[in-house]
Image (tube, rainbow, N blue to C red; front, side, top):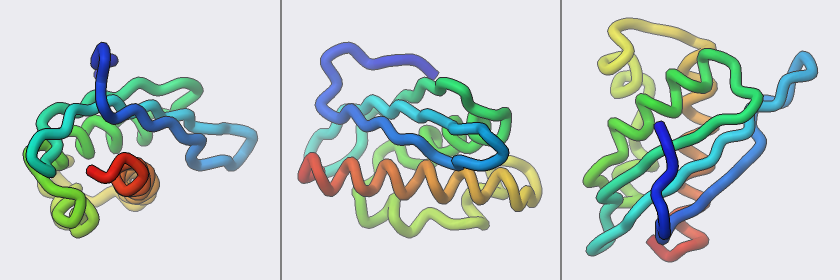
Length: 108
């Protein structure tokens, strides 16, 4: 969790708008040779499942290419979490999609 000063990758998105809540996720990263070398996040108005999902995404996405990040799935998420969580995985998918779109936009 945190911010990376002068990060090449700066993505923000409003995720999970429901019940009046809007998770605002900010992703900051460094890319080298087509791989994500560093990734941190910050949240505003996030519920606990988004904090957990974003943290797990940061762990799983390190040293991976955009294509590999796109393939991260429920099994990967549950392995880090230690078990299933439908709500947590839904948040993870939204955060992963935001990261992938940001990588596409940055040509990463």
